[in-house]
Length: 117
Image (tube, rainbow, N blue to C red; front, side, top):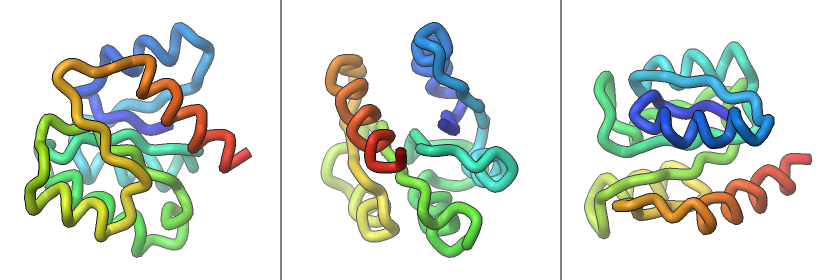
């Protein structure tokens, strides 16, 4: 699972539960990490330094190494052009946060990880 560092509290939660996680500070770094680690799932924010999350999702879909990896978007944005672009680019789900509902997030992650198994 690749998680941008803005979500490092989520990363800690999943590390404590035994999941292997990789953190990335930017959209570009997240894509690089995804190419080298071949994650089962990517969790990304739409508002990131080094490129918007929706751009990273679109780039991920165009890359043969990452195109089949599901992307879950965590964002504070509601209905907006970036959210629409993320869905159009192939995001599997959009979760609106503030605060993060860990129970819902856990169910979404489990659902998408079980599809990949």
